[in-house]
Length: 241
Image (cartoon, rainbow, N blue to C red; front, side, top):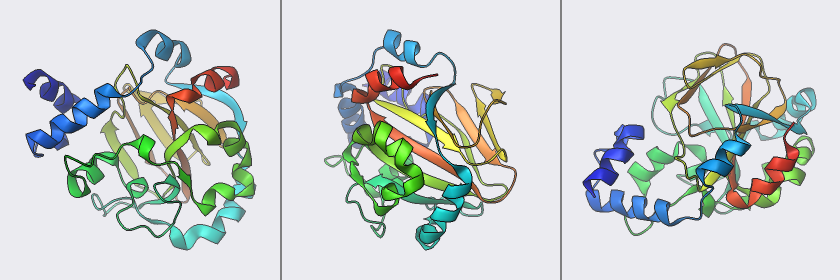
């Protein structure tokens, strides 16, 4: 038990204030999930980000997202001094007005504030598309990966909006990630190295087991923050470029 907690705190030190029973309930649930083993994970993630053949029309997206601007809210209740906003794409009930929506904040914040040891919510619990998923400009993304998508959101950052260094999964991994952005005003750093090859509108397979961070160097920077269940593996392998 002590070893399991020590390993958890290496990647999520912010959870150290949580009750031990609750933390162990999470660890047991996480370890019990079907996972992608190290060999197959590395075959998929041949670099920190891997291009897929899916692209979003950035100009059309900027026009279409205006319909939903009123639904963007602050990304969680921490670091509210920074301009970080989000709108759910896939959540627990398909609504845009759910209070304390796990798809509107970092998972660890939701775990700390709103979860109990007998009700641990994970990305895979979120499977309901919101109206945002019906946007015409997102059709390439939804047709390729929609059947596999779990907790997902569209983020919007203005200048100084950022995520601090963190990891999302450990390998063997029970979940996979896609990522993309609409702007070159997004600086992404993974495993301590700045990624200079990002193409706006391109959807990437994202190695969230690496320590990663990002920040916006301009306003109106949208990001596609996409969670997938592991049934997506074969499709991801065929959609890589």
